[in-house]
Image (cartoon, rainbow, N blue to C red; front, top):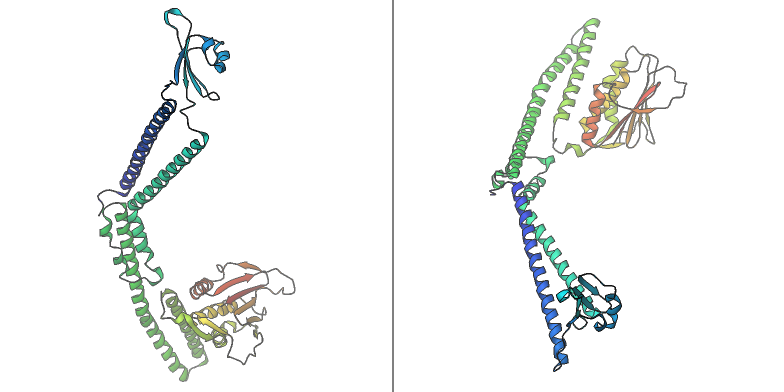
Length: 416
């Protein structure tokens, strides 16, 4: 349980990290200053010990220019102004001060040649300082990562819980895995509760969908089965030609209604008991679709040609597709019905070309078949609702559907 919001926790963590680093850097600089002081005093004491018993001072005063060290005389003759000067080559520091009683200026010279370390020691000192700075930087980085990780730990915990939920296999109990009470009342808690409610609604929707498709599958198919049984009884009775035509029309409409119901139920199902990995023969389903839709060619002078590459038409053992056989039958029925409906009298033939892993359904839409046209891929919209449903069925089963059209013909391709 967290008492503060995520924004405040991040701000507090950042402030704590900056404060700790500032204190550490302050102690580091203070230690460096004290170390420098001790080093200077030690060097000066060492120089005095080496000259004992003749104690010489590194700090001297000069009132005359001629009494200055030779290296400073030429500079002193330029009458420099008051202030501090450094001469690195001579390792001298000079202070120009006003003289007493209106006399000319005096010079205070500090010789640091015996105090400053050698160049090799400077490099070692620089290396040590670099190492200390690098260690402090690494410490600051590690501290920042640790503090920020603790600050955003609830977000990472929520992300892990959500990542463990499989959206493809969502169960009715998945929303209970989030447990939003452990995230408190901050922004993460609000997000967790929102995700829990969303998953709960999705789970309820999936449950309603399963119940609906299970009930609708029975409730919708039962009257259709009753109608088809009644039509079979009527066909066996002595009917006039006019009545038989009416029965045929009702029978075709019933078959179309049955196909539509099965199609929409197939699309509505989220899962279908592993039937999407079924292997089935393609040719029997194609022949069945042609027989069911052949009434659309009645009164038209249109032929239907079936071509199989490297397979005899009588050989029904191949090709073989993998997926949902009912979905494949619905897709083929839609393609065949669409081709039969859009083919006018004398604009045949309708060609169904079957290869090992692809099915082509081609129909003529113009009598100008002698002209050469370049086919272009087009959308399934505008060629009936059925082709849009075919696209969805293919996406569900991992198949591929495309439609090619030009001024003379339309070709639909279904590959698996």
